[in-house]
Image (cartoon, rainbow, N blue to C red):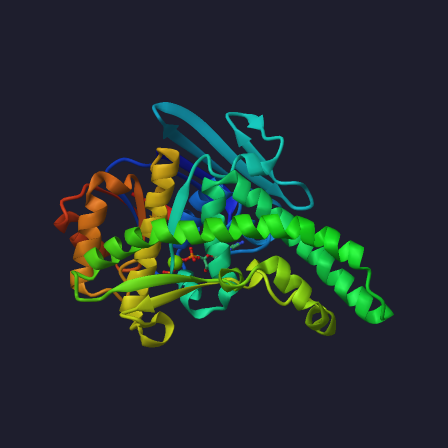
Amino acid sequence: MRLEKLSLFNFKNYEEAQLSFQGDIQCFLGNNGSGKTNLLDAIYYLSFTKSALSTSDIQNIRLTQGQFFIKGTFTKNDRVSEVLCSFQQGQKKIIRENDLDYGKVAEHIGKYPVVMVAPQDIELIWDGSEVRRKFFDSLISQLDRTYLDYLITYSGYLKQRNSALRFFAEKGRVDHDLLESYDEKLIPAADYIHHRRKEFVREFLPRLVQHYRFLSGDAQEEVAVTYRSDLTAMNWRDALKKNLSRDLALQRTTTGIHRDDFLFYLNGNELKRFGSQGQQKSFLIGLKLAEFESITIAKSLKPLLLLDDIFDKLDDLRINKLMQLVAHDTFGQIFITDARPARTREIITGAGLRPGIFMVAEGQITR
Ligand SMILES: Nc1ncnc2c1ncn2[C@@H]1O[C@H](COP(=O)(O)OP(=O)(O)OP(=O)(O)O)[C@@H](O)[C@H]1O
Ligand SMILES: [Mg+2]
Protein backbone atom coordinates (compact mmCIF):
# COMPACT_ATOMS: atom_id res chain seq x y z
CA MET A 1 0.00 0.00 0.00
CA ARG A 2 1.20 3.54 -0.75
CA LEU A 3 0.16 7.00 0.24
CA GLU A 4 0.49 9.12 -2.89
CA LYS A 5 -0.76 12.48 -1.63
CA LEU A 6 -1.56 14.17 1.64
CA SER A 7 -3.43 17.46 2.15
CA LEU A 8 -4.00 19.21 5.44
CA PHE A 9 -6.18 22.11 6.41
CA ASN A 10 -5.98 23.67 9.89
CA PHE A 11 -4.55 20.46 11.33
CA LYS A 12 -2.40 21.26 14.38
CA ASN A 13 0.24 23.85 13.34
CA TYR A 14 -0.57 23.61 9.60
CA GLU A 15 -2.85 26.13 7.98
CA GLU A 16 -2.67 24.43 4.62
CA ALA A 17 -0.27 21.87 3.23
CA GLN A 18 -0.12 19.67 0.18
CA LEU A 19 2.42 16.92 -0.23
CA SER A 20 2.97 14.26 -2.85
CA PHE A 21 5.31 11.35 -2.32
CA GLN A 22 7.83 9.90 -4.73
CA GLY A 23 10.99 7.94 -4.03
CA ASP A 24 11.83 5.12 -1.64
CA ILE A 25 11.62 6.90 1.67
CA GLN A 26 9.97 10.18 2.71
CA CYS A 27 11.91 12.39 5.11
CA PHE A 28 10.40 15.23 7.14
CA LEU A 29 13.32 17.31 8.37
CA GLY A 30 13.47 20.48 10.46
CA ASN A 31 14.00 22.00 13.87
CA ASN A 32 12.27 21.03 17.09
CA GLY A 33 8.66 22.15 17.14
CA SER A 34 8.46 22.75 13.38
CA GLY A 35 5.70 20.18 12.71
CA LYS A 36 7.44 16.96 11.63
CA THR A 37 5.65 14.66 14.06
CA ASN A 38 2.37 16.41 13.22
CA LEU A 39 2.75 15.19 9.62
CA LEU A 40 3.20 11.59 10.76
CA ASP A 41 0.25 12.09 13.09
CA ALA A 42 -1.92 13.20 10.16
CA ILE A 43 -1.05 9.97 8.32
CA TYR A 44 -1.73 7.97 11.49
CA TYR A 45 -5.10 9.73 11.73
CA LEU A 46 -6.09 8.63 8.22
CA SER A 47 -5.58 5.03 9.34
CA PHE A 48 -6.91 5.01 12.91
CA THR A 49 -9.34 7.98 12.68
CA LYS A 50 -7.62 9.48 15.70
CA SER A 51 -4.34 11.11 16.65
CA ALA A 52 -1.53 9.03 18.11
CA LEU A 53 -0.87 11.86 20.57
CA SER A 54 -3.82 14.05 21.49
CA THR A 55 -6.77 12.47 23.19
CA SER A 56 -9.32 15.06 22.14
CA ASP A 57 -10.03 16.15 18.56
CA ILE A 58 -10.33 19.77 19.63
CA GLN A 59 -6.58 19.74 20.28
CA ASN A 60 -6.02 18.76 16.63
CA ILE A 61 -7.66 21.91 15.27
CA ARG A 62 -5.20 24.73 14.63
CA LEU A 63 -5.45 27.24 17.46
CA THR A 64 -8.23 29.82 17.05
CA GLN A 65 -9.75 27.89 14.10
CA GLY A 66 -12.98 25.87 14.06
CA GLN A 67 -12.37 22.87 11.80
CA PHE A 68 -9.59 20.69 10.40
CA PHE A 69 -9.43 18.19 7.59
CA ILE A 70 -6.91 15.62 6.41
CA LYS A 71 -7.10 14.06 2.99
CA GLY A 72 -5.03 11.15 1.72
CA THR A 73 -4.82 9.47 -1.67
CA PHE A 74 -3.83 5.81 -1.39
CA THR A 75 -3.05 3.08 -3.87
CA LYS A 76 -3.84 -0.39 -2.67
CA ASN A 77 -3.55 -3.42 -4.97
CA ASP A 78 -3.42 -0.99 -7.94
CA ARG A 79 -6.63 0.74 -6.94
CA VAL A 80 -6.69 4.41 -6.01
CA SER A 81 -8.86 5.61 -3.17
CA GLU A 82 -9.26 8.77 -1.21
CA VAL A 83 -9.78 9.02 2.53
CA LEU A 84 -11.05 12.17 4.19
CA CYS A 85 -11.11 12.83 7.93
CA SER A 86 -12.58 16.03 9.17
CA PHE A 87 -13.71 17.47 12.46
CA GLN A 88 -15.59 20.60 13.33
CA GLN A 89 -15.98 21.77 16.89
CA GLY A 90 -19.28 20.61 18.39
CA GLN A 91 -20.02 18.15 15.58
CA LYS A 92 -19.48 14.48 14.89
CA LYS A 93 -16.28 13.74 13.05
CA ILE A 94 -16.53 12.78 9.42
CA ILE A 95 -14.66 9.82 7.91
CA ARG A 96 -15.17 9.33 4.20
CA GLU A 97 -13.76 6.89 1.67
CA ASN A 98 -14.17 7.91 -1.96
CA ASP A 99 -16.81 10.49 -0.97
CA LEU A 100 -18.89 7.94 0.93
CA ASP A 101 -19.55 8.14 4.67
CA TYR A 102 -19.13 5.04 6.79
CA GLY A 103 -22.08 3.63 8.71
CA LYS A 104 -19.73 3.10 11.63
CA VAL A 105 -16.27 4.66 11.91
CA ALA A 106 -15.01 1.28 13.19
CA GLU A 107 -15.50 -0.13 9.68
CA HIS A 108 -12.61 2.02 8.49
CA ILE A 109 -10.07 0.74 11.02
CA GLY A 110 -7.66 -1.79 9.54
CA LYS A 111 -8.35 -0.89 5.90
CA TYR A 112 -5.30 1.38 5.57
CA PRO A 113 -2.89 -0.12 8.10
CA VAL A 114 -0.11 1.96 9.61
CA VAL A 115 2.64 1.03 12.06
CA MET A 116 4.26 3.89 13.95
CA VAL A 117 7.51 3.86 15.91
CA ALA A 118 7.65 6.90 18.17
CA PRO A 119 9.45 8.18 21.27
CA GLN A 120 6.33 7.72 23.40
CA ASP A 121 6.51 3.94 22.79
CA ILE A 122 8.86 3.87 25.76
CA GLU A 123 5.76 3.78 27.96
CA LEU A 124 5.31 0.17 26.82
CA ILE A 125 8.40 -0.66 28.84
CA TRP A 126 8.06 1.83 31.66
CA ASP A 127 4.36 1.97 32.45
CA GLY A 128 1.95 -0.50 34.05
CA SER A 129 0.42 -3.58 32.47
CA GLU A 130 -2.51 -1.65 30.99
CA VAL A 131 -0.49 -0.11 28.13
CA ARG A 132 0.98 -3.48 27.20
CA ARG A 133 -2.46 -5.12 27.18
CA LYS A 134 -3.67 -2.24 25.02
CA PHE A 135 -0.81 -2.73 22.55
CA PHE A 136 -1.41 -6.47 22.16
CA ASP A 137 -5.20 -6.10 22.24
CA SER A 138 -5.14 -3.52 19.47
CA LEU A 139 -2.85 -5.69 17.39
CA ILE A 140 -4.74 -8.96 17.90
CA SER A 141 -8.06 -7.16 17.32
CA GLN A 142 -6.85 -6.00 13.91
CA LEU A 143 -6.19 -9.64 13.00
CA ASP A 144 -9.12 -11.34 14.71
CA ARG A 145 -12.58 -9.79 14.84
CA THR A 146 -13.87 -12.43 17.31
CA TYR A 147 -11.15 -11.37 19.74
CA LEU A 148 -12.39 -7.77 19.59
CA ASP A 149 -15.99 -8.89 20.17
CA TYR A 150 -14.95 -10.94 23.22
CA LEU A 151 -12.91 -8.02 24.58
CA ILE A 152 -15.97 -5.78 24.39
CA THR A 153 -18.13 -8.47 26.04
CA TYR A 154 -15.57 -9.02 28.79
CA SER A 155 -15.05 -5.37 29.69
CA GLY A 156 -18.80 -4.71 29.65
CA TYR A 157 -19.69 -7.60 31.99
CA LEU A 158 -16.67 -6.99 34.21
CA LYS A 159 -17.92 -3.45 34.81
CA GLN A 160 -21.38 -4.77 35.69
CA ARG A 161 -19.96 -7.45 37.97
CA ASN A 162 -17.85 -4.88 39.81
CA SER A 163 -20.72 -2.49 40.34
CA ALA A 164 -22.84 -5.41 41.56
CA LEU A 165 -20.08 -6.29 44.06
CA ARG A 166 -20.10 -2.71 45.33
CA PHE A 167 -23.88 -2.76 45.60
CA PHE A 168 -23.91 -6.09 47.51
CA ALA A 169 -21.26 -4.84 49.90
CA GLU A 170 -23.35 -1.76 50.60
CA LYS A 171 -26.58 -3.72 51.12
CA GLY A 172 -24.93 -6.62 52.96
CA ARG A 173 -26.82 -9.07 50.75
CA VAL A 174 -25.60 -11.05 47.74
CA ASP A 175 -27.64 -11.99 44.68
CA HIS A 176 -25.82 -15.17 43.66
CA ASP A 177 -27.98 -15.71 40.57
CA LEU A 178 -27.07 -12.31 39.19
CA LEU A 179 -23.35 -12.90 39.76
CA GLU A 180 -23.62 -16.29 38.10
CA SER A 181 -25.30 -14.79 35.05
CA TYR A 182 -22.37 -12.37 34.68
CA ASP A 183 -19.85 -15.16 35.20
CA GLU A 184 -21.49 -17.23 32.44
CA LYS A 185 -20.75 -14.37 30.01
CA LEU A 186 -17.29 -13.60 31.38
CA ILE A 187 -15.88 -17.13 31.44
CA PRO A 188 -16.10 -17.99 27.71
CA ALA A 189 -14.82 -14.50 26.79
CA ALA A 190 -11.87 -14.85 29.19
CA ASP A 191 -11.08 -18.34 27.89
CA TYR A 192 -10.95 -17.14 24.31
CA ILE A 193 -8.88 -14.03 25.09
CA HIS A 194 -6.48 -16.01 27.27
CA HIS A 195 -5.99 -18.68 24.65
CA ARG A 196 -5.53 -16.14 21.86
CA ARG A 197 -3.04 -14.00 23.82
CA LYS A 198 -0.98 -17.10 24.63
CA GLU A 199 -1.05 -18.29 21.05
CA PHE A 200 -0.25 -14.83 19.71
CA VAL A 201 2.83 -14.35 21.90
CA ARG A 202 4.08 -17.74 20.73
CA GLU A 203 3.94 -16.75 17.06
CA PHE A 204 4.97 -13.13 17.63
CA LEU A 205 8.08 -13.77 19.74
CA PRO A 206 10.27 -15.37 17.02
CA ARG A 207 9.63 -12.32 14.82
CA LEU A 208 10.67 -9.94 17.58
CA VAL A 209 13.75 -12.03 18.41
CA GLN A 210 14.80 -12.11 14.77
CA HIS A 211 14.46 -8.33 14.30
CA TYR A 212 16.20 -7.54 17.57
CA ARG A 213 19.06 -9.88 16.75
CA PHE A 214 19.52 -8.24 13.38
CA LEU A 215 19.38 -4.68 14.77
CA SER A 216 21.82 -5.41 17.58
CA GLY A 217 24.25 -7.06 15.17
CA ASP A 218 23.75 -10.32 17.03
CA ALA A 219 25.57 -8.88 20.05
CA GLN A 220 24.74 -11.95 22.11
CA GLU A 221 21.63 -10.16 23.28
CA GLU A 222 18.52 -12.25 23.60
CA VAL A 223 15.09 -10.70 24.09
CA ALA A 224 11.93 -12.43 25.27
CA VAL A 225 8.29 -11.75 26.02
CA THR A 226 6.41 -13.79 28.58
CA TYR A 227 2.67 -13.79 28.88
CA ARG A 228 1.52 -13.78 32.50
CA SER A 229 -2.08 -14.50 33.39
CA ASP A 230 -4.15 -15.59 36.40
CA LEU A 231 -5.80 -18.09 34.11
CA THR A 232 -2.61 -20.03 33.40
CA ALA A 233 -2.53 -21.79 36.73
CA MET A 234 -6.17 -21.78 37.80
CA ASN A 235 -9.56 -22.88 36.64
CA TRP A 236 -11.18 -19.46 36.58
CA ARG A 237 -14.70 -20.78 37.13
CA ASP A 238 -13.58 -22.34 40.43
CA ALA A 239 -11.49 -19.29 41.30
CA LEU A 240 -14.43 -16.94 40.90
CA LYS A 241 -16.40 -19.03 43.41
CA LYS A 242 -13.51 -19.47 45.79
CA ASN A 243 -12.61 -15.78 45.79
CA LEU A 244 -16.13 -14.45 46.16
CA SER A 245 -15.68 -13.31 49.76
CA ARG A 246 -12.45 -11.52 48.83
CA ASP A 247 -14.11 -9.92 45.78
CA LEU A 248 -16.96 -8.75 48.02
CA ALA A 249 -14.57 -7.35 50.62
CA LEU A 250 -12.54 -5.48 47.99
CA GLN A 251 -15.63 -4.69 45.89
CA ARG A 252 -14.00 -5.71 42.63
CA THR A 253 -13.13 -8.81 40.64
CA THR A 254 -9.67 -9.70 41.87
CA THR A 255 -8.73 -12.35 39.28
CA GLY A 256 -9.12 -12.50 35.53
CA ILE A 257 -7.59 -11.55 32.21
CA HIS A 258 -7.96 -7.84 33.02
CA ARG A 259 -4.89 -8.36 35.20
CA ASP A 260 -2.79 -10.06 32.51
CA ASP A 261 0.64 -8.73 31.67
CA PHE A 262 3.29 -9.19 29.01
CA LEU A 263 6.77 -9.15 30.52
CA PHE A 264 9.76 -7.99 28.50
CA TYR A 265 13.23 -9.45 29.08
CA LEU A 266 16.77 -8.86 27.89
CA ASN A 267 19.19 -11.73 28.53
CA GLY A 268 16.81 -13.13 31.12
CA ASN A 269 16.56 -9.87 33.09
CA GLU A 270 13.74 -7.38 33.23
CA LEU A 271 14.21 -5.01 30.25
CA LYS A 272 12.94 -2.01 32.23
CA ARG A 273 15.64 -2.37 34.86
CA PHE A 274 18.52 -3.90 32.95
CA GLY A 275 18.20 -2.55 29.41
CA SER A 276 20.17 0.54 28.37
CA GLN A 277 18.29 3.31 26.55
CA GLY A 278 19.59 2.13 23.18
CA GLN A 279 18.71 -1.48 23.97
CA GLN A 280 15.21 -0.46 25.05
CA LYS A 281 14.79 1.56 21.87
CA SER A 282 16.02 -1.37 19.76
CA PHE A 283 13.54 -3.62 21.55
CA LEU A 284 10.69 -1.25 20.74
CA ILE A 285 11.73 -1.04 17.09
CA GLY A 286 11.89 -4.86 16.97
CA LEU A 287 8.44 -5.00 18.57
CA LYS A 288 6.98 -2.64 15.96
CA LEU A 289 8.67 -4.42 13.06
CA ALA A 290 7.23 -7.69 14.36
CA GLU A 291 3.84 -5.94 14.49
CA PHE A 292 4.40 -4.88 10.88
CA GLU A 293 5.10 -8.46 9.88
CA SER A 294 2.04 -9.84 11.70
CA ILE A 295 -0.24 -7.36 9.90
CA THR A 296 1.42 -7.96 6.52
CA ILE A 297 0.90 -11.71 6.80
CA ALA A 298 -2.67 -11.50 8.06
CA LYS A 299 -3.84 -8.91 5.55
CA SER A 300 -1.54 -9.61 2.57
CA LEU A 301 -0.93 -5.86 2.60
CA LYS A 302 2.10 -3.86 3.70
CA PRO A 303 1.25 -1.13 6.22
CA LEU A 304 2.84 2.32 5.98
CA LEU A 305 5.76 2.54 8.36
CA LEU A 306 6.11 5.82 10.28
CA LEU A 307 9.43 6.32 12.06
CA ASP A 308 9.47 9.31 14.39
CA ASP A 309 12.89 10.42 15.70
CA ILE A 310 14.15 6.95 15.01
CA PHE A 311 17.90 7.69 14.96
CA ASP A 312 18.15 9.16 18.44
CA LYS A 313 19.85 6.91 21.00
CA LEU A 314 20.91 4.36 18.39
CA ASP A 315 24.60 3.83 17.71
CA ASP A 316 26.01 3.78 14.15
CA LEU A 317 25.91 0.00 13.96
CA ARG A 318 22.21 -0.15 14.83
CA ILE A 319 21.37 2.74 12.51
CA ASN A 320 23.13 0.94 9.67
CA LYS A 321 21.32 -2.27 10.45
CA LEU A 322 18.01 -0.47 10.57
CA MET A 323 18.71 1.13 7.18
CA GLN A 324 19.63 -2.26 5.71
CA LEU A 325 16.29 -3.53 6.96
CA VAL A 326 14.19 -0.70 5.57
CA ALA A 327 16.15 -0.53 2.30
CA HIS A 328 14.93 -4.04 1.71
CA ASP A 329 11.57 -4.08 0.02
CA THR A 330 9.98 -5.89 3.01
CA PHE A 331 8.82 -2.72 4.71
CA GLY A 332 7.06 -0.94 1.87
CA GLN A 333 6.58 2.81 2.08
CA ILE A 334 8.42 4.57 4.88
CA PHE A 335 8.10 8.03 6.45
CA ILE A 336 10.80 9.31 8.72
CA THR A 337 11.40 12.46 10.81
CA ASP A 338 14.65 13.93 12.03
CA ALA A 339 15.70 17.25 13.56
CA ARG A 340 19.19 16.80 12.05
CA PRO A 341 18.81 16.99 8.24
CA ALA A 342 22.49 16.41 7.39
CA ARG A 343 22.55 13.16 9.38
CA THR A 344 19.47 11.81 7.65
CA ARG A 345 20.66 12.72 4.16
CA GLU A 346 23.94 10.96 4.84
CA ILE A 347 22.30 7.84 6.28
CA ILE A 348 19.70 7.56 3.53
CA THR A 349 22.00 8.10 0.58
CA GLY A 350 24.58 5.85 2.25
CA ALA A 351 21.96 3.10 2.20
CA GLY A 352 21.46 3.66 -1.53
CA LEU A 353 17.90 4.96 -1.12
CA ARG A 354 16.23 7.73 -3.13
CA PRO A 355 14.68 10.04 -0.55
CA GLY A 356 11.76 12.42 -0.89
CA ILE A 357 12.95 15.32 1.27
CA PHE A 358 10.55 17.78 2.91
CA MET A 359 12.01 20.64 4.92
CA VAL A 360 9.62 21.73 7.66
CA ALA A 361 9.73 25.14 9.36
CA GLU A 362 6.89 26.53 11.49
CA GLY A 363 4.17 24.63 9.71
CA GLN A 364 5.52 25.47 6.24
CA ILE A 365 6.91 22.79 3.97
CA THR A 366 9.44 23.17 1.19
CA ARG A 367 10.76 20.38 -0.99
N1 LIG B 1 -3.83 22.60 17.61
C1 LIG B 1 -2.66 23.23 17.38
N2 LIG B 1 -2.62 24.48 16.87
C2 LIG B 1 -1.45 25.10 16.64
N3 LIG B 1 -0.25 24.55 16.89
C3 LIG B 1 -0.22 23.30 17.38
C4 LIG B 1 -1.40 22.56 17.65
N4 LIG B 1 -1.09 21.35 18.14
C5 LIG B 1 0.27 21.31 18.18
N5 LIG B 1 0.78 22.47 17.72
C6 LIG B 1 2.19 22.86 17.63
O1 LIG B 1 2.85 22.12 16.62
C7 LIG B 1 4.23 22.30 16.88
C8 LIG B 1 5.02 21.21 16.17
O2 LIG B 1 4.84 19.97 16.78
P1 LIG B 1 5.59 18.66 16.31
O3 LIG B 1 5.46 17.71 17.43
O4 LIG B 1 5.12 18.21 14.99
O5 LIG B 1 7.11 19.15 16.17
P2 LIG B 1 8.38 18.36 15.65
O6 LIG B 1 8.83 19.01 14.40
O7 LIG B 1 8.09 16.91 15.58
O8 LIG B 1 9.44 18.68 16.80
P3 LIG B 1 10.53 17.74 17.54
O9 LIG B 1 11.75 17.76 16.68
O10 LIG B 1 10.77 18.47 18.81
O11 LIG B 1 9.96 16.40 17.72
C9 LIG B 1 4.40 22.42 18.37
O12 LIG B 1 5.14 23.53 18.70
C10 LIG B 1 2.96 22.57 18.88
O13 LIG B 1 2.82 23.62 19.78
MG1 LIG C 1 8.68 15.31 16.74
